[in-house]
Length: 102
Image: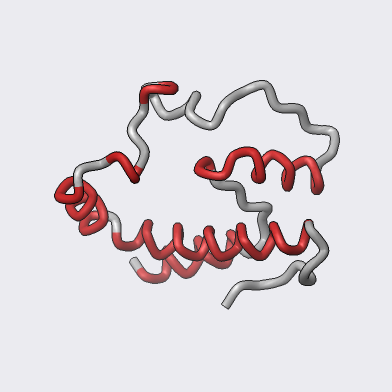
């Protein structure tokens, strides 16, 4: 299973990464790299519950612990995606060169 996590992380390092919890910045970064794309949506449209969907911050702590326990591999990929997102954000703002997160 760790090979899958490593492969996912390698793939992330070749992509523009966006996060729904920072959707406005995500759209700005996507427009930076792909200026021909247009958006007519909101961050919660694809959650199945629309604007009424719970966020991680709204979950009961015991429910969050169970979810995290059963999704450890996904969390490793998510943590890397967050780092990648921050690196890309700085690159778009001109602070650092676009590169790999370690």
